[in-house]
Length: 191
Length: 83
Image 1 (cartoon, helix red, strand yellow):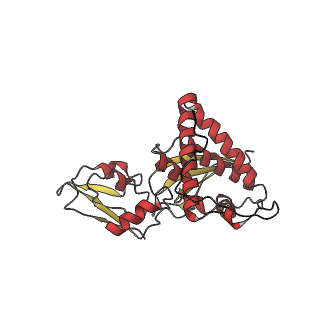
Image 2 (cartoon, rainbow over the protein chains, first blue to last red; image 1 turned 180 degrees about the vertical axis):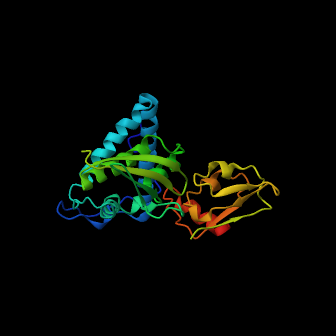
Image 3 (cartoon, chains in turn cyan, brown; image 1 turned 45 degrees about the vertical axis):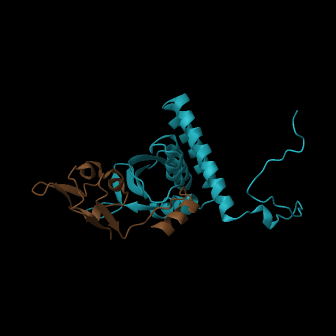
């Protein structure tokens, strides 16, 4: 027979306080350890979801996640000031992506400008130094350049398209544990 | 500016970093059979070479060290006390 007095034992103390719908009490915020634990749980969930998606859909997983990211990018950049100036657009993009996706424009030492003009296209290399996606992949032991990387890929393209009103493309050149290099191609008059 | 230091005593001359670097920062020194840095200015500090080097023979100085929020703070706190 089940013991009705049985209680689950936990190391953490349960939080008791007063709650009013219009006020969010301090107790709901939690400490840094709570945030850390929540972040790690989310990383594990997202990582296993990406892995399962790839297993079920194969290479189609990249397209699904790319679309999701692109939609997010368009939504996130809706309120941002529109511009056809690439440098200004990169500034706007850095604000949309936020500090967790810290990126810079990059060029090899021998190249004068950050941008390369090629017919009706402008090419710029972006180096992503901080990236939550990369951290999630490392947390869950998954390889880079998988579906989750396509989420950021779509997010960046969506935001650039929204800010500049043009068609964009992002290619992953190289991935590393500390930074990833991507090529952003902007097609003028291609919308 | 990135500064790369190779520990020549540790380097086993496998050439993994030469093959892996997307910007051809390294070359093999055929006489010493060790890696040498030839295009330091082109290093973007992705640290792929760090990850692939079996001897942990290189050090990158003055780089943006990416956030690693996946690291367990409690574990790294304990390690800090030991090391």
